[in-house]
Length: 231
Image 1 (cartoon, rainbow, N blue to C red):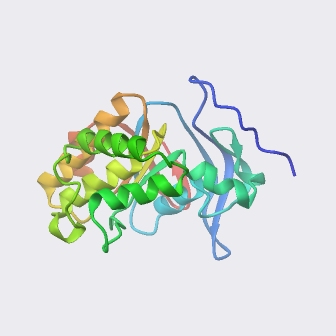
Image 2: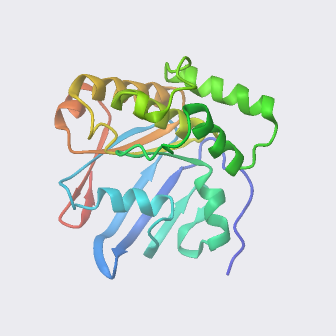
């Protein structure tokens, strides 16, 4: 098995490059012949009905679901030959925003973020404090560090999730239905945050079925339909 390169990708390289990729879940082909690429700073909507394969495509990018066939690269990692021990290193370079937040409910916002930094190799307490302050400021939540998740509204929790996704300064964020549990106004605010992040050079792929958001906030549109990915 080939050794994964540890060199940093060039600034002009594709962050994601799929060609002829088949994606299976429990031996059922969800998507076939996927051709998809992503450049730095792009904002991409991934559209499709429930069960169309949107989440499966995102999960394949961070190696939650294996790529069965074709050519697939994320950063410099070849997903078809990815070693299990390399998966955590790939995931550290991808920010993930979930619909259901997945915050640790037994600790406050600061501790949620500090836990992620500690798990990804940060050890200097002052650097941890500084980075947490930076990401909370970026999402307008700098005064919520010592709130418990249940003390926050849904929109506030999703902002914390975005802050968590930014901790390791990824060049790629995957957002899986990030507005699905939010009211329309709050959902719009979340998309505005994600678009602002993309404008600073971090690519964002956002899975959604909310066509009103797509019409309000422009971006490149990719469809999951009939087991295919279509542009």
